[in-house]
Amino acid sequence: AANSTTAIRGLVFAPTANRVAPGSTETTTFTISTNDGVAAAVTNNTTTVVSTSINDAPTITGAVSNQAVNDNATISPLTGVTIGDVDVPAQTQSVSVTLDTAAKGSFTTLNGFTNAGGGVYTFSGTAANATTAIRGMVFTPTANRVAPGSTETTTLTISVNDGIAAAVTNNTTTIVSTSVNDAPVVVSGPSAVPNPTTVNQPIQFSAAATDADVGDTVTYQWDFKDGTNSTLQNPIHMFAAPGTYLASVTVSDTHGGSTTASVSVMIGTGVLGEGDSDGDGFSDEIEVALGSNPFSAISTPLGLPSPLASIPMTHANLRIHLDFARNNGDAIVLSGHLPVNGVIPVNQRIIVDVGGVVRSFTLNESGTARLNDHEHIALHVRKVLLSSSKHPNFRMSLRAGSFAAAFPDEQLTSAPAKDAPRTVNVTVIFLNTVMKASVPQRYTVTGSNGRTTTPQ
Image (cartoon, rainbow, N blue to C red; front, side):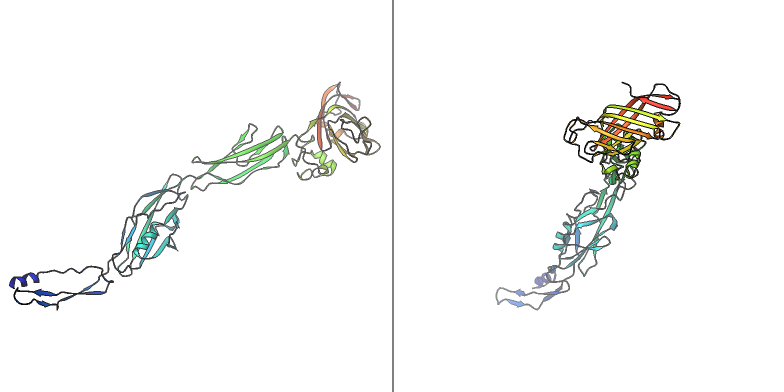
């Protein structure tokens, strides 16, 4: 009995933890039984132990640092995190994930979390549910916060609070985002004005681009597809030959990114005359003579489309007489072959430009027209003008006029000359077709009279 007393007094009891909710108690009753082997056993169950459940703080494990991502990609940085709490029944945990700087990025897949603003994301639920939710969060770094190739580190602080113990925090998780270079973006243009236009006309090319990268600048490289280039952002260019040109501009940044955009430019041969201010393909002289606006590309003579191509006029013969001594003593006689086919309708217009002297005739049913007693034109297709598909010949006569002011550029002046070689440009617009000829002349000035002849 003495030994049993000593032994029983040394027993140590450890209650099982977390069998009841924190703050609750559980009573354990001890029944002592002794038997001497002769009498009946003697028992005693007076001894009881009342254990109080103590709250255990939640735990955060599995956080990983230095997780790499490009700033144009996403990452799930919390896939290894476990939120733990041994208390039973399962407690409701208040969980938050906080960015060290909200501007560095955001969670774009919340998986049950709530965006509380300011870079804070919250969740409420059991530890098991919180673990599932936090592992599915997806983070998107803010692009272009630092220069291309540079990195920025975002620290995530996880906080868990079971409502009893002090909140547990963990800031092991870090994300290292690398800034990826973005190519420039053309935000305006490229454009070409005027377009369409004619050879040797100034065209304003324009383009504008942006680059999202920090500290990046852009350069422009134009290729006009006629063998010439420009490094200006908004160059002015002229094309020397007719055609369609797919001009392109390549915008490049300092880190190797680039983008290319194009604009199609239509270049015609134009109509002869002293300049084409609006680039619509009709000389200023023709537009003024026919009542259209020489400074508006949408205003063309007789509503004709811009003549972006021309064909040669053959067998052109030109005689010019200039009387420098008196007014209205000049004369122009032009004849030639019109290389056009098809039926010629009544009231068809024919426009003639001889070195800047412009006339417009409306043909009658016989293929002739007269502006006044001194200016007329006639077309001849044998004897079946209105239905023939043969090429018509024409002859225009302008007499008793004052034309000398139109020919200084051709050097048809009062200066003495003897069979001097000259060239006069002629344009005829007929059936919406532009026909052109550069007619060689021999120019002679005798006294106050100048005369040209076409060499044969």
